[in-house]
Length: 207
Image 1 (cartoon, rainbow, N blue to C red):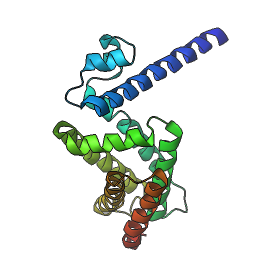
Image 2: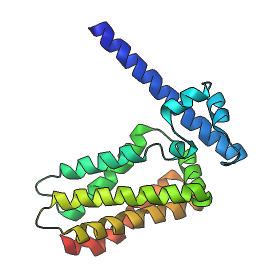
Image 3: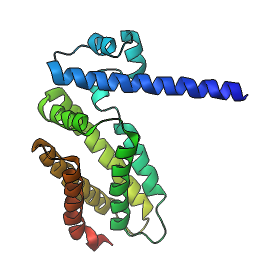
């Protein structure tokens, strides 16, 4: 039984390494030759796997760019669902923001340079712009529903949606502005907290 469990763990680690290799290869090629010019076959070859293997992990180039979106949303919803009894809505949202930063650092999926490249790709490639907006709305709606459910009878759906949109919108836009200005990782984290403080100062009325 221990041998079988060990084999499963080994396979999972190998799959994760292959997935990570595909992400890194894709972003490297996007930076070198452009998003539209990069083919799936090139990404697979750069990661030293077959094109068939690529499709075992991702359905398209767009999926590679947004590889972590669904998982981050699930984590956020789970955190809100397990709120502490004494937390106010803004305290819970601030903890979500801080945990999101921790998740990004701990996962290590992307270097700061790759994260900046991804932002620039999303801002400049029409196909990615459309997909990014769709995913942004979907994730924020899911988070808003979870916030509403975390405070039954206290926070309306409208209040929850407005709070999530105000906080996450402020932070995302501020971070995009910093990355476009070639800021350092430390400066971006300062920007995250500053944007959050500004947004939360206006949201404390819901507490």
